[in-house]
Amino acid sequence: MYVILARRAPVGVVFRRGPANRVLVIKWNTENDTFEAGQWLKGRIYERRCDLSPEGDLLLYFAANWRRPYLSWSAVSRPPYLTALALWPKGDGWGGGGLFVSRTHIALYHRYEETRITAASTVPGWLKIEPFGDRPRGEDDPVWSQRLQRDGWKLASEGKRVKEDYDAKVWIEFDPPMIFRKPHPTWPDQYVLEMSVVGIKEKNGPWYLTEHSVIRTDRVERIGRSDWADWSQSGDLLFAKDGRLFRLRTDDGVLTPMPSRVEIANFCNLAFEERVSPSEARLWPGPPASRLIGDR
Image (cartoon, rainbow, N blue to C red; front, side, top):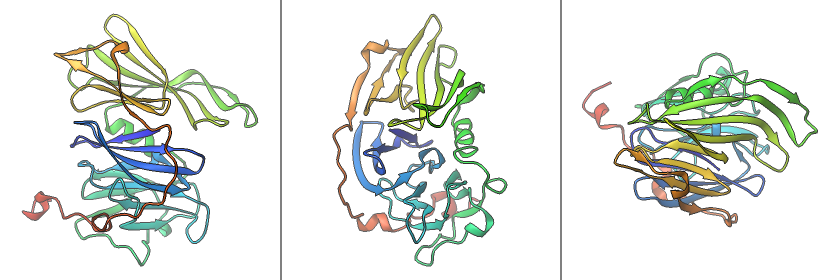
């Protein structure tokens, strides 16, 4: 699983992958831990090249099914649905996706010749689309690293590749690992979340092998092998592990010990099903209130 949290609202989008080439999008209300299952995709969503609008009402995603007419594409939808409000055909796995600079501004990681939307989709006048940096040459980076940086993560160690063998159980291994750290939003001197990337492309496993830990003033508490972790807006620790979502609460400025974690969702036993998006998911939301009063 992988999660992207909105910056200005208690909203998250969960990408739940599996079986292979099946991905379900789930909308998460992080205030009350309720979930809304959306649509499945028969294909792959490259979650680290995706982004949520600051309010969590729009999802920019990059996906591929390697079938015509598009092979791969970037699109904007209303989460948890994948019905494209705007769709940009891509055709390969280089680049794709992008970032919400703001709710009214998307940086699209496409080549110039790939920035024309399909005839069946539109972009409202209040939404600006511009290229993301130079001509796309990478895959998840630089979109992933720039989103991490924007959301408060800092690169603490670039890591060192010690093995690169495509036929091995793990294609690429890092020792020391690549490390990112994110201080607690309210008590940054007391708690820091650490993400370690120890490998890439495990056979019959995830693409990224990550481990998470909480660095306290007096000790380090290890979550261990886990798919994703971040701080909630309320300061709780949220993380995904073994197909489940967990919450570790912060009470009166104290982050409770790891054994006190609460399982808030179990997505292990889900199976693919066709789902049609509702009519409201096929329409663009209105412009932000600030644009209505002329604030650009």
